[in-house]
Length: 165
Image 1: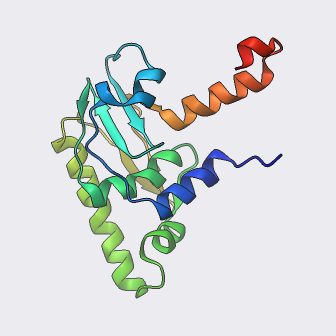
Image 2: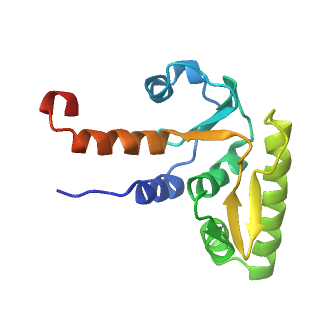
Image 3: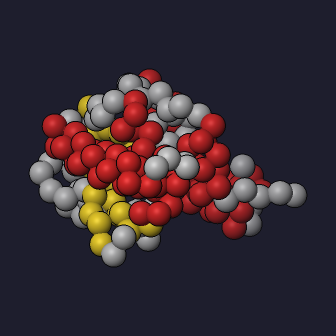
């Protein structure tokens, strides 16, 4: 039996799938199965089957190119992602100086776009020691990938075969 880690699954999805961004949460099966109500001050992020963010039940619209780049930052929010890895992942073998300038500009646009999209004021992306991190400590974040992973782990640990399914 072969198990794929959630992180590897995201890497495959990130590089082989262009995310579709504008998704109505009420019509999204994965979203409906994960929550029964929209909680205050929580950003819901869907990464499986496309990428979308909602806040207070409203889509957070960042645009296709910015939203696809958010996936790595958000999923790596606990440990962050090194600047070198972001440059490699996003810009490949591009000129190093040009890629670094593009990365700075992209992070700047992301920070501005998150506030413009209706999220509360605060820091969402920080940089420390060459590591970029999603640092939205002032709001809760719920990732469908993590909810799915917890549900799979709970099912694997379940002793009753009927409940495991």
